Length: 164
Ligand code: ADP
Image 1: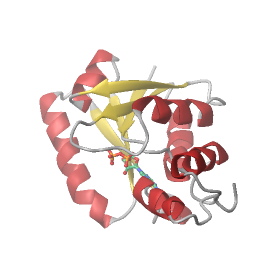
Image 2 (image 1 turned 90 degrees about the vertical axis):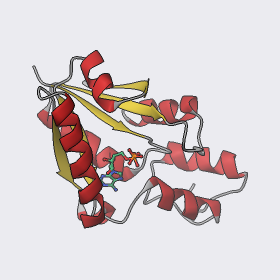
Image 3 (image 1 turned 90 degrees about the horizontal axis):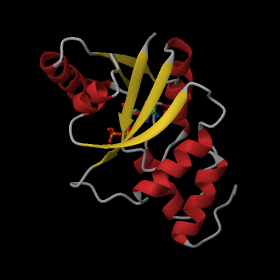
Image 4 (image 1 turned 30 degrees about the horizontal axis):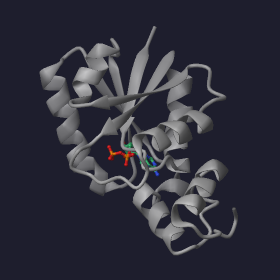
């Protein structure tokens, strides 16, 4: 039984995250998405909103669940008895910091490994930050985020996004 966590800010969830989730859900038995409470970042969406959007967009995966966590990712893995941490790699720029984090986690808890999925090409440029920027200026985000997120952007920025 392989149990994995997929930690991140998910502010908000994008098609890039969902690509990683759907691929990871095929290779592990149970996948727990961990939404990080990061006191140093000021998120656009509240924790409740980020959780809601993730739950809505992953409801068709029977082995995927969503939780919130605070503190170290490795402690979240331990608490859930998960032996794998899933992360996505977009470009070389992700590589250095991700490798550092993975090595630190592995040295703290040798029983836990990190598994990387390289992004599908169509999402290589995509981040939550990009999606927020595009939505803020009222452009079409329908290729970047699922419809429920487009709707959430529309409410947040109080304008009608094309493609919504
Ligand atoms: P964090 O703040 O921890 O980077 P994110 O929500 O931005 O959290 O990302 C969570 C994980 O999803 C990270 O491993 C990130 O590299 C990955 N990810 C984000 N966008 C994409 C994408 N377009 N393709 C592949 N992986 C992605």
